[in-house]
Image (cartoon, rainbow, N blue to C red; front, side, top):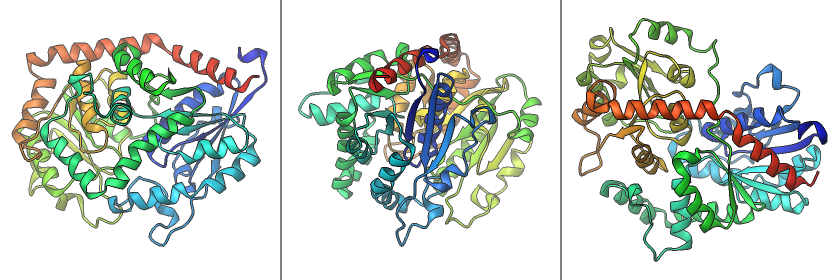
Length: 443
């Protein structure tokens, strides 16, 4: 198809989070190989951290979207990475004010179509004012999205998939958030539905039909839109990143080591760090643990962990502050488990590389994703106590169950099967994505 039509120009607008930008960048790479020219639009601070491979530099063009300045939000905070949690609502408010700047970008770039993040209801309005079709792109799981749509569209009916039922402590936490900020919480869910309503006949979603079919079909019925899957959109490991970590892993036995990371937006409390640290000790399993602090936290790594912890685990544990090359680590044969917050991108990465998940959700959609991980059979969730707190003994038990013990063989086998399926499928989904975009642009 790409050889018989002109180049289609697509403007991509993600939310200002690493987990939202990276999947669109991966989609941009795949589309640019099929005669699409991509304008990837984000704040200057986000674009400065994005690495566009040399072979894509002529077809993927970064475009700066200037977020209106606010007193508490200088330009270096125009990203969720390292952002103090109390400024998240301020960042959302500032980004929602960027519509006029997007209008200028559309006039300058002259795209045929806009692909916008499913949290940005103002983006399709701007595109429509310029006579350009716009398609919503969801970085979340079909299960979570179908739950949101059910909550808005059929509030009096019971959600049909009991396997996504949450534990009481998560329900209590969500209710408390609703009580503290009812307007914001309802607005966030309604915003997702409104973005869908403004999407041009379909919505793009990151996922795997073989695992999520029932949720995808239910979402289609609720939304009235065709759900077009774009695949897992996992970045291939970059070989020059984190060589010292890979050298450390090279010394470990196959599938003997776990990787622990909680994404770019969640910062563990002192108590959470303590329970995780002692849980790792009790498990007696090799590990790489990425520990992050917000930009306003002034604390040294040694001070953030239990006294003597680093010394006691020095032969089998590697603690890294800030960042590690996640896909490269997960692809290493010595890694046999991923202690994950269950951000949807991390779940996709773990499944692609065949690494079983020790699910430790923290907030947002992660508790639902953890339920999906167990539903798929690719991991086990660390249960919390009645107060919703993590406990070291439970952490250790789940780690050993997934990585070491015979009882975890089913999980280990299942995730390997899923990995083979993903690799065998290749880019089949992108054929449908290309076809959908071409039809929308009427080229």
